[in-house]
Image 1 (cartoon, rainbow, N blue to C red):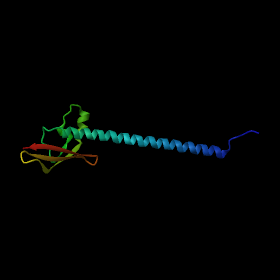
Image 2: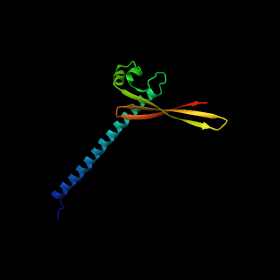
Image 3: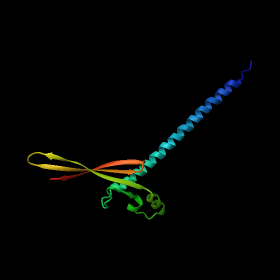
Image 4: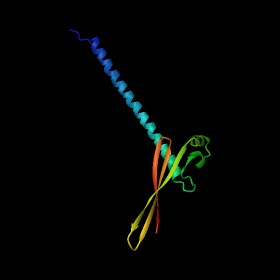
Length: 131
């Protein structure tokens, strides 16, 4: 007696293989999406860092374009930076009074919000001390 594969077995096998292939393609697509999102977040973080670490310019409480603040000779980079708008908002928080009867120390706290549209938002705190 000769054993043969029936048509139903072949159809079930093809269906199972198809499900596995579709699942693998969906996993690949999700991984590519998250990889691109991570790259974009890293890029926006570096843009915000370039502005937040620059204390030379008074760029507080206004919207700035990154292309106006950071200068590059490469035309492609300049074009990309020209369209990046960063919103900078400073807020003075209540100062902290530390110390005892002999020595008083006042800590001024400034909270800075930096954001690029709805893509990324960062908050930085700056502290200054007074006697």
